[in-house]
Amino acid sequence: MLQVAQMIELGWIQAGLVVGTESSRPLLETTIATLVSDRPFTRQQIKTAVASLTIGSASCAMLLVEESLSRTGNRLTAAAVRAHTEHHQLCHSGADESVAGGMQPWMDTDSDTLLREGIATGRCTFDDFLSAADWDARTIDVSFTHQVTVQHRRQMYESLGLDSERDYSTVEWLGNTGAVALPTTLALGCRHDRLSNPARVALLGIGSGINCVMTALEWRRGQVQEGTESSLADAGR
Image (cartoon, rainbow, N blue to C red):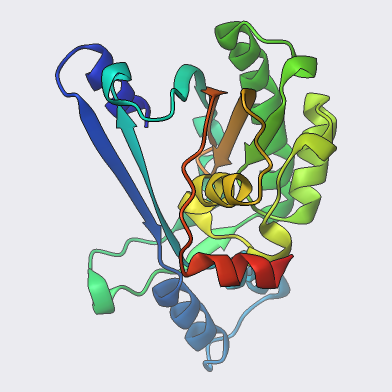
């Protein structure tokens, strides 16, 4: 999103479509096959593989355009980015040079430490975010975060001093859909009328690395069309 937005601001392009996908099948199948094999495991090794069993699959796309082409008036106005790469070993996959059906990734995750250090990274990034957006935490109307676990969501909001009632969450019924969890949740929040017109919207993204990206949206209007995802959304409420 930020790369496309900068290209639009520089006048290089007028519009850009950002597409993301998280496919859980290769990781889940490899993890299950390895855990039930004759390979000996310590308790700690099994613990670091548990997070791999929580990953889901999803795809999402976001269209960004220059102001003259916009049909909604929604604006991406500011962003803050931070990387605490000293924690890159907390969640990492082994080398996997295959593609498609040949992928067999194995991931080790120190979930407890990743949770603690991830929230600390988010806390630092949030201060930069408020400064870049020229916002106060109390003036944020609605927020969407990376959907990992219920515990992660609760502790993150406590750390940032944000009202969790202003958050829209899907982790309770979609689980962790990885890289596209946040924009998917934004789309479903729009469908369920969680965004007022206008609204100050905070997108609070955080992931392994540890990498954190927070973006500010000045929301004016959504364009929601009925689709096959509506039955899934309704079933989860």
